[in-house]
Length: 310
Image (cartoon, rainbow, N blue to C red):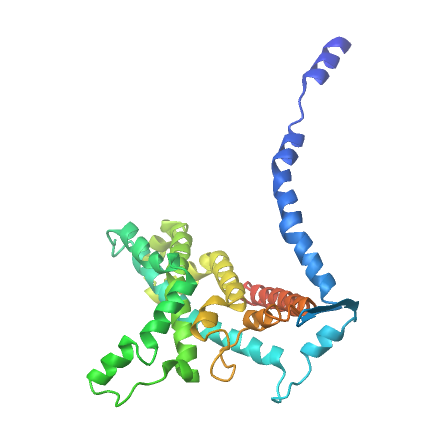
């Protein structure tokens, strides 16, 4: 008996080490290309490190001086960090609200068993196509369409709506509206498909029971669909918000990187990019990045806690 137990013990194989071996490449790549740059960014945020002409100043340790500078009122009478954070949140909001409303309506429409819509795969492909276009190319298209010599102005003047070309890219309302419109067009298809997948994962017998009990469509939506869809909705909402906070390419191209007019379309990432231009101010850029990370974490946690309440 003792020999048999020893033989069985020798023949037993532990597969745990193979699991660790297979996931090891991910942690190595993450440590080299993500974790190390993040730690280096935090480290640089405490140093004075920039380029002045052909001379490089620093790195000199300055403690929290870079963070203090970010909360200092500039010559125009405002704190840039707060102003650009407000711009970013507003630009995301005006694109996100119609995005979620339209996406939810389309998701309910295509997944309705009563309507039994045919050709769902075709419609999924069509509504997702704008997401495949690069944001910079999308922005260049809108820049060409709405410039003072673009086809939109020419069409409006030919119809007699305008006497002369209107500067769509020089007025706050129209610039912000175009940015919100582009973000909506690029992302509502992706949101629709994710919400459709979530709705299709709900047991159909729940909807049948509700209809048999005489529940209206509104009651079914708020008492069955939305509560069970909440995990997917929270995921989509938070990822959309994180993407909105990191908004860069659309306003960068549309406003030529200066956030016209009067910095009203300047986002936090565009503000960060000003420190990585000619001056190569890695200290200030690091401080902005750290604050951006904190803002994202706080907002994501707050949204998750708020939406996830019973």
